Length: 467
Image 1 (cartoon, rainbow, N blue to C red):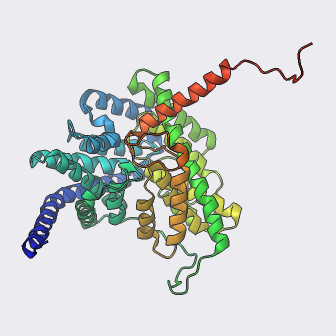
Image 2: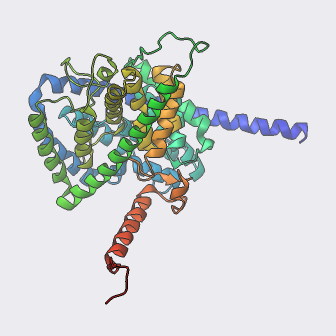
């Protein structure tokens, strides 16, 4: 390559990078500011829910009006995260800008009345809808729209959790299982950093978690504990199975609500009755809302699972029940913060059983269940490092990678595509298809096996000739 061609190529690269930075930074600033408004609103409505316990009885009305509004005025916005992933894979009609206000208001309303939901779904939809609006404003082509939408996901995720690097990698990793799409690497990183800055500029702070185990140990003196690593491996398998169960049961419950009630606005009314009944049957409200904090010291919360003095064997189960019922019926919000709760609680319980450090295993569950449920192990390892520090990187990686493998070909996002299957046993699954089709293939294969068993003639147990 001649010197002129070399410098021309580098100039084109630099020009492309500058173009994307100039384009994504304003978009990310808007997403970060909306994320700040969203996080501030969540704090206010959570305080209101604790101050006015009767708000839980408004849950049926809130759910009915929420779904009704989406039906009559949403016009495509109800597609949520799956719509954004579909548009990245196959750009078409775009993402309606109305998705941003709809998801922000509906998620805040869900938390006001006590629905068990998270924040990531809202953040990703804020990022996707704002990015789509910028793409239309600047008349970008399909390839450029894909990159900007990925940057929008990174901006929303990075801002709402305060993890910009994990946000950038999540945007690349979440689209296709087994493959990373690096064409959006620089735009996604720039967007995640800019959105995180914008969110912090509004005075929003994120909860700080600390692992006391080996705190203060320098990298030069830290050595892996073989027995502890084996326990982490056991926990990683459990986290992956938990992620698989959560995803599959969520999809099954969504289908069940549709079969039980054809009129969509009534589904959250039914779910509200179930949730209120569970609250009074269990005698606690600790599984409502985010689960990040509570004015009641005895309530189960995510930071509480890091306390070595607290052992909690069943909070992971009940939080999963509350979250699945809430989101499967039509209430809005994300699954990720509840998955943090479920993972940290399960890690706490497993550590108590195995005799392992409570705070370390709570941290491992925090990220590993999320890794299994979204098929994003690299992003979750990075998130663990950003939140908990680099001391336990090896343990974080083992837990996240095992959870990813053991969760199978399932996800909370059915629009994820198959890039490379996770094991040779799944070689029958064709690449390029979304996970919703994988579920259909598995259901058909199971039905065929059952049919073969039913049609098989009975075998005589006598080996000798008939008399």
